[in-house]
Length: 228
Image (cartoon, rainbow, N blue to C red; front, side, top):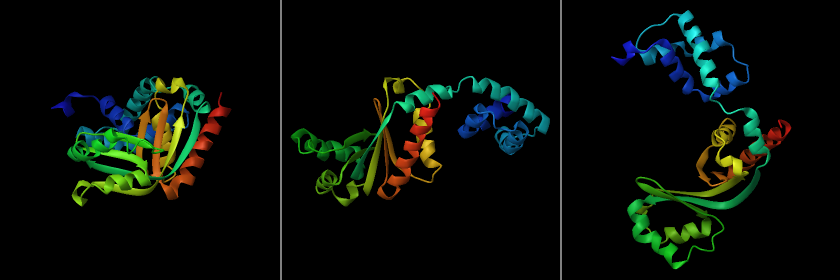
């Protein structure tokens, strides 16, 4: 039984990994370790299937946090990338999801004919069971016109895209996507889609949420400039 073999540090590590924001707070030195141990005590016991003392949890937190902090990218590295990044906005977009089979039998022909070549935005993401297409409303409606209702898994209108374009270092700096998405999420904005394409991070939000999301990212970039 694994729960009987692993020590308390193993379960503390799992509990901390489920709270990445706590790791960032630890990095900033603003976490009270006793309070943190109390916060995760119940989760640790639930995962392990057995009880631990408060003291053992706290000691494990001290040990595990130290080793985990060594793997978190330095704030300065993230700041350098963000401070050199730019933002661009696209309005009036749609997000359309269809089964893989529908994409191959119907929509690929539209790409081959060049009828979608003049769209301002076009991103195609192929998953295991479906394909999601992010494009302008006019192009999306042309695609929808050749589909049946059953072939449309999702069709979201009135979407906007914020494209964050970073320097070449964005490709090798871990934590950028998570920082950007978490900054937006904590403001209560839902990301309809998020796509990483070379040096671009493309964030799709409801049109009504665009102002909040854009201001959040702009503030994040301005903050990064003050850190270098």
